[in-house]
Length: 267
Image 1 (tube, rainbow, N blue to C red):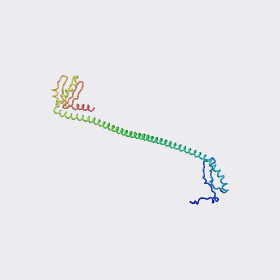
Image 2 (image 1 turned 45 degrees about the vertical axis):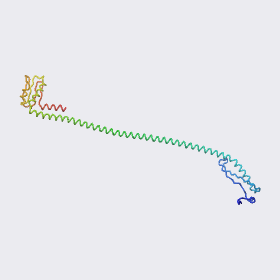
Image 3 (image 1 turned 90 degrees about the horizontal axis):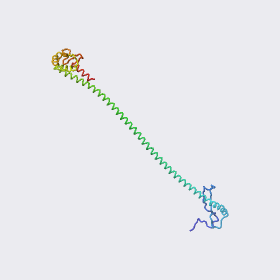
Image 4 (image 1 turned 90 degrees about the vertical axis):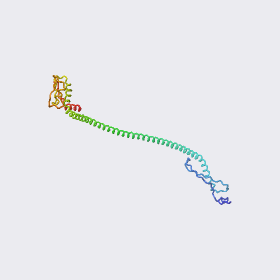
């Protein structure tokens, strides 16, 4: 196989052959400058130009210097790598601490929010309860007040009705008695006289005045004595009597007795 790109021995004199140079960037070197190394390719060619031979000498020196710089560069690189690793670890720890702190703060805020909500809920519930209780108390007080007012009205009505009923009952009784008097006035007058005489036991003189129509019946039914007598008087209504004595007088008329009863009931 023929390689057309390969330089043969005859054409070697017409070319300058150099090794490919790799550029080395060292930002960590003490000089702080870029170094370039060139290493000439050693050929088994016996014939090289004088110019090529002169140029190879300084390049060999540069290659030696680069070889000396490589250990420091690697050491510096390792150091930087270690520092970077430490920084990464510190950053991770810091992130973990921040996450932990954030979680704690979040939990604290959530608990605080819950407590505030509970307190607010309790306050609102208490306020609502107090309002409802106040409304109930107001309604109850108003109801009691109305009941007291109705009670007073009923008591007044009862008292008024009681008096009216009693008065009405007396009036009815009076009408009944007056009707009875028309038929038995003498008997009624005699009975009243007997009752009133019993109240005047200490009297030495007693006089019974009665209506002329009742006079004879009363006189016959009353046991007369020297200190007791019966007389007729037109001013006295039928069924009634008036007792006169040395210790006092008593009106025994039916109308007067009814008025006394009314007065007693009205007190």
